[in-house]
Length: 431
Image 1 (cartoon, helix red, strand yellow):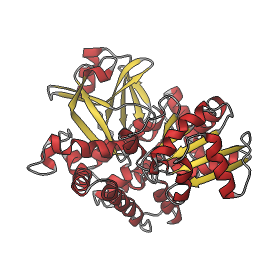
Image 2 (spheres, rainbow, N blue to C red; image 1 turned 180 degrees about the horizontal axis):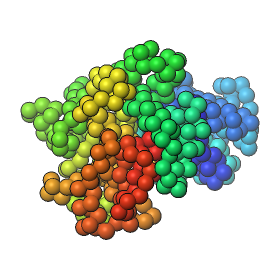
Image 3 (tube, rainbow, N blue to C red; image 1 turned 45 degrees about the horizontal axis):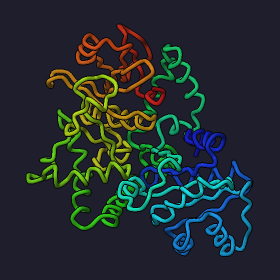
């Protein structure tokens, strides 16, 4: 399936190719697939090494971190010659060995011009606990998120519709009503399917039919996440991590979606669960948005670290874990939880577009769902799951802080009124 992320890989090839690329992201977002495709389509030759499945390669890094010595051993083992100018080397599941990660510094510093790409599961967790000398400044970092809505449309062969959405966004001109309704239907499908590649492939396999769509695919992904929690943490922490993860649907169902430890258990305390939350964020399974008291640059300077919300990195997995009947979403019923799914969808879309996530609240009287830092300053973003766009909080914020403009994301068509851009939910990927 097509991924926009390929543009970032091409940019690395054209501008930073001698600096090893390290790709992180949640398990099963497609890191291995996209890097294999990149190596195959953009280089004459490639070598793929999976340190989890081919543990014998780890030993080549134990005695020396010298790139020539390491590659010499790989050549002997594979019975082939490596042409440095033509060959790209893909180190997968690199989190298995700190020595392998440390070696990236030496590949980067070498004058030979080695071409190295790497990926790993739970890489964020691993790097946060790195005990060796981490190659700061010697690695080109990127993160792969689940497929966003326009990638979902590409998988469904809806490129012409993407073109129409893009044109309407750029001109802030209403999309043809027929296309608008079609795009909203596809958006509702995305809330159920989400952006995990396996889930989208299953949806295509089902003939784009919810009745035939096997939700076991999503449940299996969640099971694999829970298995990782047990495998890569000790027993006590595994239970805590799992309990936090499973509490998110209920956390978001509250009127005040701020994370509350008591939702995990009556005796749950911050000091006991803080590391579990960090694990889930670093693993790419959850997204964190933090409250700011004053919407000024830099937002991090005005955040309240103890006041935050947590969203799933994929709305489809949230829908599956919440046991929501797909028909409730696709038929556009007045289900209250639809607002939760909508906020989660926007959170993952903004994160995928590179935004750090913040929200603003004023004495619980007004709240802005997201604040984004743009070239035109801090822009407030309000999210609505329907066309009911009464915006007391947004108007209150704009009157108080005078931003260049505000954004309202809802089921309404494109438009502009009183300094507020109306962006349809299906076009959130354009922000």
